[in-house]
Image 1: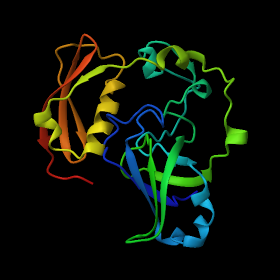
Image 2: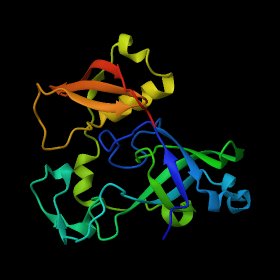
Image 3: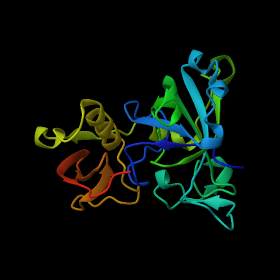
Image 4: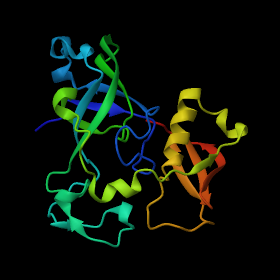
Length: 227
């Protein structure tokens, strides 16, 4: 397989990337096609869909050997489950699957056709192998059960984001950053209330800590380079 496109987001590293698509609706992305696939005709009719599936690669988690069991971070990294019962990035073929909202199809952008999407869970530069439309009549299953993920879905932090740090970001980026922090981007086995974390976001390093269910933004420092 070869990448047909790459996505551009405000998250240059894995740290801070939402654990599932759709959790942070305000987090935007631009899908730019590789030269071979910059063909507007390939997108004909896609504008009629509200959501799309992205099939992509965990490009920083390629494995030469695979393990039949993994330790899901959401279970604290202590319990093993079968790899096919999780969405761990450490998989035989390192493939990811995301359902994102399709905000706009731009057929003649500066780099050819572009797809503007939201609710992304991909870091900047992630290679995309395929795009498929989301079909509600077949893809939506309200009766579905969520296994071990169900009891973890509603864990949300409060966020203390002072105005003096908000001014570095657009209103849309502020909403996205709050959404990321609400979902606690720390590894689940990190529970040190004193430790200060740094999360690259939109050209800045956001320093925060988590105490008593509150994620507090302590500082925002401009990064030298931002992809």
